[in-house]
Image 1 (tube, rainbow, N blue to C red):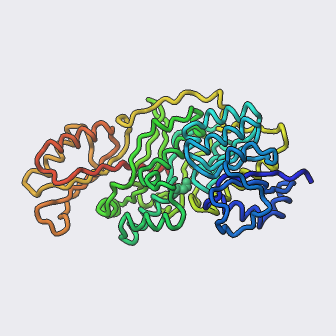
Image 2: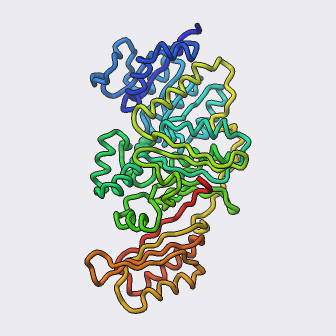
Image 3: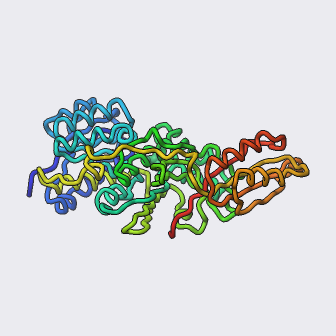
Length: 438
Ligand code: HSE
């Protein structure tokens, strides 16, 4: 049997500790599958004394990941700290510069400088694997990077944040408040260190930016993503969506259009009979529409220690199974030097259906005036309904669902209504996404 593959793990949080436990408990099986043993030879974590349920006394501890990246006793640097800058960035660069393989779950780092890191890895002929960075345990990186080569992807979209999906699902099913659901997601270890990254869509945006590059062969453009989080979604929206045959999900969508590539993250109405609408809780789903393959939907656990560690483990096993000099898959699917510049399609030119919820004063002519604003902007309506709003006899709710229209038209119509005197609250606008077949 070949020499053991020696790994150094930076970060022993939820994912790092799960990984260490699995590597220890499955050591024999992994050695057989990979043709060599995988050995944890170094770790770096803030707290040396914490009980993680594994014996790490025989392992070399380093005070900082940067020091561990210089260790002569590791072949693979496994970065599980997170953070777009600072220690994660410095230590990954140090490891790649030394010609170490790197495995990371760090979507924020890849979204910020993934192309540069890919170039470094490709220059050194080492692997930079990051399956766990997007959709936890779902093997979407390998699917895009390897299995779908040769397909022209037209759209990729998905539920990529377990925390948001968990919150929306529990709000809908149990009528719990947003805050209570968020606390529970944090307790279960799904949320980011700063949960606003989950709630406001940044985490989904980082993941989407990486998928866009893999799907379309363009440079990573995380700063060009249109972003809306879920903190603005109310129980009223969730109920109205259900009445009209939709469910609300936080989706990340990247789509090829005539004017460029759209990248957007926002609460989205999906038809309740679509497969993605049934994806509940912390589960993630990624759909890919490609010309040769057709439509693919991958559903699975998107967050949590074991699910994420499973993806990290697969990446480490790939390195254990490869032989020196046999690196053949470009880090981002296309060689980093051959990625094309990202051409952005503006959100104003997005075309699709819209859900618009208005709270209006109950006066003669309001309904007709709302319809007029729609007509003046060339918006065709699929449905328009008016409801009493709770016990308030003064205010009414009007809900509109449009046929496919341009975002710019919807914005103009909403601005027009805001200039009228009958709105009793801020209008809510939610985009509708229709899966092709699934
Ligand atoms: N906070 C993330 C989520 C963890 O909720 O999905 C996985 O990236």
